[in-house]
Figure 1 (cartoon, rainbow, N blue to C red):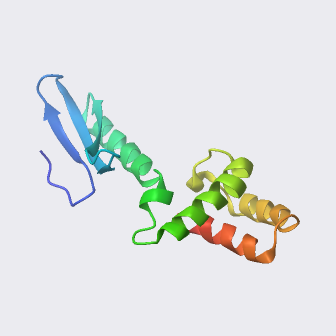
Figure 2 (tube, helix red, strand yellow):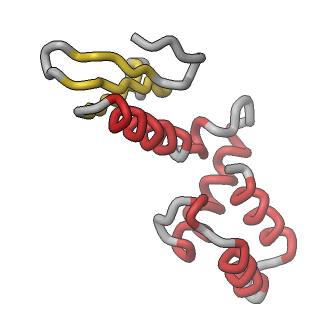
Amino acid sequence: MVNRGHGEGTIYWHEGRQRWAVLVAGGYDERGKRVRKYAYGRTKTEARMKLRELLREAEDGDWLDHGLGTAGESTRKTNRYLAEGHIIPFLGARRLRELTVSEVDKWLAGRAKVVSTSTLRKIHSTLNRR
């Protein structure tokens, strides 16, 4: 196995599959069991690329539940409401890193016409948390 820092995943040779294996350990599921994702590549370079993809997916996971650290339940509830009611329906299921500044600016300008200034600030803050 290749030694990596905490949270950086692992690449190792899997004898049974005769391929390079990638393992990324995430958080825990609702039963308290560790969530692990695997991928395989024929070459070590291919495995590294898959490792990067898995790490991005894990990073882009449900940040409303896991990305708020020690935030209280009320903050989590508010952010989920803003995301589900204002962000996701208008920006879709696109990854945040795929959005451009001009797209977000246009979207926020459109939202400013239908929500209060306070709500708009909260929506922007929720989007920026990621």
